[in-house]
Amino acid sequence: MENFNLFTIKDRNSLLKVRKGESKFGEHVRLLPKLTNIYDDIVNLDVDYVIFGISEDIGVYANHGKPGTYTAWENSLNFLLNTQNNRQNSGKRVLILGDLSYDNDRKRLLRLDLDKKKNLAEVRTFVETIDKDVTYLVSSIVRAGKTPIIIGGGHNNSYGNIKGTALAKNGRINVVNLDAHTDFRPEEGRHSGNGFSYAYAEGFLKRYFIFGLHENYTSDKLFKTLKKIKHISYNTYESLEVRNETDFNSELDFALNYISEKTFGIEIDCDAIENMTSSAKSPSGFSTKQARQIVHHFAKHKNASYLHICEAAPKKKTDPKVGKFISYLITDFIRANGN
Image (cartoon, rainbow, N blue to C red; front, side, top):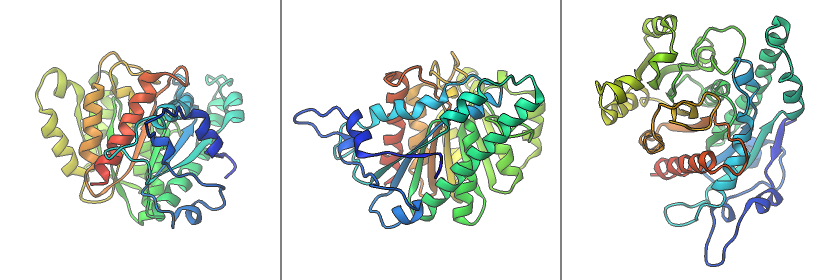
């Protein structure tokens, strides 16, 4: 793949911090020696999980958002590889594949003035290129019988995750999305705010549950749209955590029942986490503990088929607040999903 960087032994060793008497997660993960055809390369590999990154923020920029989400992949690897490998946390059935990266195009596109319609159209058209790459990767991994874990980029990549899984499964899938926003905005050209609406309109997404929607950042028009569509359900952060009208654990069960009758994906938008460094950082949101509980709750169901963690925007590759948090979510997913 033109835009794909294979994660190599050299890459891994440059990040590993080995200590005498300890065994690190990164010492046990699997790596591919070369990349020919992703499906053929992994179908007979003795792993359950394939982790790859999306080092881009073009979809966020196309939504008039703040760039920075391209750094999450490298930041997360620093911490994931250096977690302890033990009975509860084993890397032996995990393949670190690599990442999609668009450095040259990113530098050019992020200089464009989006107040000009021609420029906006160009950036949004490029997001379709990213869509194709993500769709191909996810579809190949799922067809090979593995579970993809996708790290980084904007929430535009939900579209490729959904489409890729749906194509591999030969049918529409369901999704639960921990998010402050619906990302169900109009089909006006691809960007980070309409991945789910495009996936729904094109017949890849069936049931969609938004967990913890923020009432302050959802337009009245969007609320009316959600009400009209019978395959969408949601709760709001305010009803859960401010007014206490609903119970957190009960809502987890309700959401799981809503989407778990068939294959479903788990989408985690870091904008929903209180004070997390992200593209739309918020002073109000779920705690990191609650986010981990959410991932665990959905991942333990047999129909949970992928995890996507997006919108994180660490300012440097050694930022522990983001990278360590994402590594917790990855290992929580693996522990729960394997049961």
